[in-house]
Image (cartoon, rainbow, N blue to C red; front, side):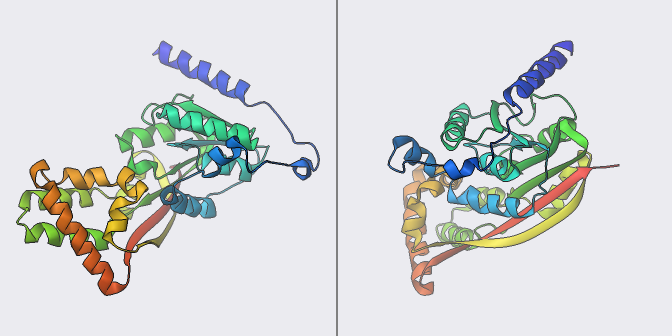
Length: 303
């Protein structure tokens, strides 16, 4: 136990040392110049996938901002929204990004350097074992992190631990009903091929999506009182199913789960028919539009 406490104390000291009390000179922004043809500018310009940006905008519209805050972004990936928050909060505040993905953190550090964001620092670590001392942060944010936590209860318990008594937690998540149009076509495709095992696996995958009630219960179990809930929907439009299934982020973020639902010997046949059915759906409606239910929840320490 003493070893863990000592590790937290050491990392906390490193955190303080990494955040010098820098104040900008008057009107320093007037001297900003950049070369849009430089390799560094181009490499850092595309800062976030459209998927996470959509939810991040919802977070940025609702999250409580102020001066002199210590902020933790849990599951910051390549630096969004940590870098954006650091800039919007300004030099009186410090932002820490935490993620287990070291390659992404290196990218985030690179962007912070190119953009000249001084009040942000990135650490490798797991949400279920946050490497900072208790009662450290005024604000903790997580943009879609809940979707990826291996143990949501452990992660929320750790967020509660490192949050100051008057601190707040703000998170976003997608909800059940996500891409309902796609999943409806997928289910009908599997039924037409008598793929009952795949249909059960797909429905289990669909059910793992969050609900407002489920997230609220998760926060309450871990000592947080929900103070704000916002729901909205966004839409993703594709020309047809062929475009959807070949979109880079769809392949990175979703295809593996869809593919895993179907046994390997049947995948070629199932996905060929699925693509054709999606294309027919899109042709009858002039495009393929997918509905994305979104939620922002905010909590504070229960008293």
